[in-house]
Length: 249
Image (cartoon, rainbow, N blue to C red; front, top):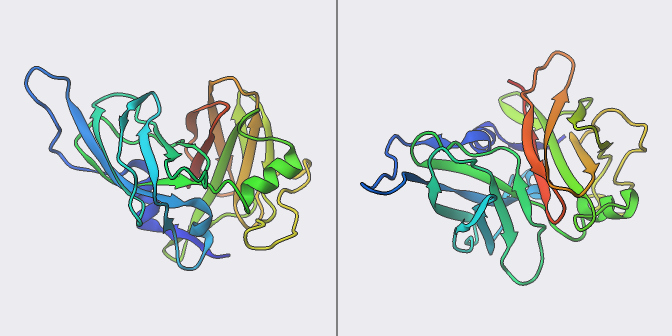
């Protein structure tokens, strides 16, 4: 199986790196700056690694007025004015006008209890020609009508995080979980999802949660023999995809 990303980049995607210098001005609420890059989720499965996604807007999920400029060719972004101590859920949307990528919430919130945050990776999933097309066709579920979550389970192998086969996932509240068999972007014509009876990830290490469209916090947990994974809590709802990275402690 191809490497998903380097260990350093995966760690950054979880919490970022923090600087002790916070953005505090007398008489104002303290804020900080988050810097990172938006990457094409499916490109992270290639030998070349994660490819930057240009022309994406990055904002806070619960305050979209706090937003970045469009990302550059490398996907780089700077998000200023993030309130210290607030819920640091990052939300990305396609600002190209071409609707290449789904709007996506990052399930791992960035740290907002310290100083500026660097090295964050936010994932974007293509709207056409890949995994999402397969989910729509086979599960009859789409972001307009369902709350969808894409989970990527990884484990450390030879110093690199790689997709983990044989992991299971569960949610609270309970919802439908489907496991990814293949990706049309790499293998055209192949079935994207395993049959609904499948209870573990395939070689891609990915699973899809499909649930009701109402906005609600969900707890998503991955499990695999001999490994312990921290669970993620994120708001799922219609209109966007939530993407989460599950790596062992």
